[in-house]
Image (cartoon, rainbow, N blue to C red; front, side, top):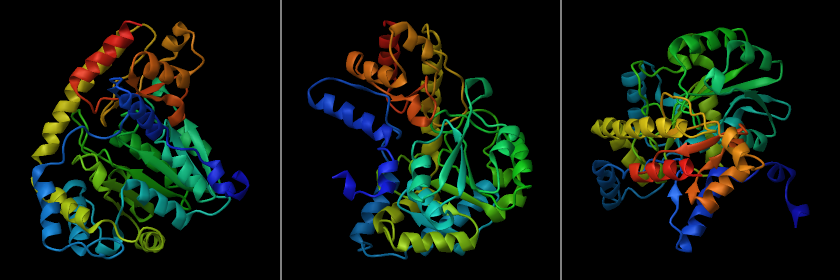
Length: 391
């Protein structure tokens, strides 16, 4: 059967995070209670005003095709969001709406990459980045970071990774899976490198923009270096900040030429995002924003507990982070102490022996680590920490 499959599809692998969720659900179906620390979505319900906007859209008959790149009302709200929150000005022709942030990145790669192009991706990385690049027949170039450098690339590493084949550089802050956040000065230092390579497009993934702690305001590389605006694509969406993962609404802002090409890709794949979900996203961006602060306060309380709890366990080193809802500790010491082969076997051990669902670090390009999602109840977090502590 494999002979009828394309070389392209055989080069990519299934999502490790979805695989963990599927295995955990399989065990739960057998009556085994699983502590869920693998899923990358808020455990909060979508705010009532947003749900009601979706219901009202259905009742009003807003159930037909929209423009491929999103309704004018939602695109206008996105432009206003960038001006209000990021002090960035985009026209309606410089933004588009997609079925989630993943489709934004897919559209971008299909629109700008060719065989032979290279894409610089810092590791640990979101699991889909390299495979989406491969689907565009381009080559991922991975820059390895680690706990010692706060999971953030240095200007020297970036400079060394760029060559004549480099077409795209990917930056994520706050990061999935590490929660690492780049400061303005760190982004300025990276921008100083990128300025010297005018052929390189930059993708800044801001999907966790609002889930942060600390005193510094959010900043992305365009805000840190406006000179890069004409070759930077911003990826964002409503999934994380408004607990709307299942609504599947992401959006992009960037140069009109690239946005127009991404719209062509989307027009021949999914066409427009859900009309009902777009109406809900409009309310998310324009409506009451107090939900975000309340959710982040809860995440910060969980973060404080899990970092302290994991660091108290022999063989685990859990760094502090600045946002998202993940902890990404180095677990190599515990792997060695348990006599396991690697982080994949560690994740299997946690699931089958401790009934804790987590994702091995190698899925994110970081062997010896593990991603713990604290987008779950404090009771679950305490249970997971206690079970690991008792190994």
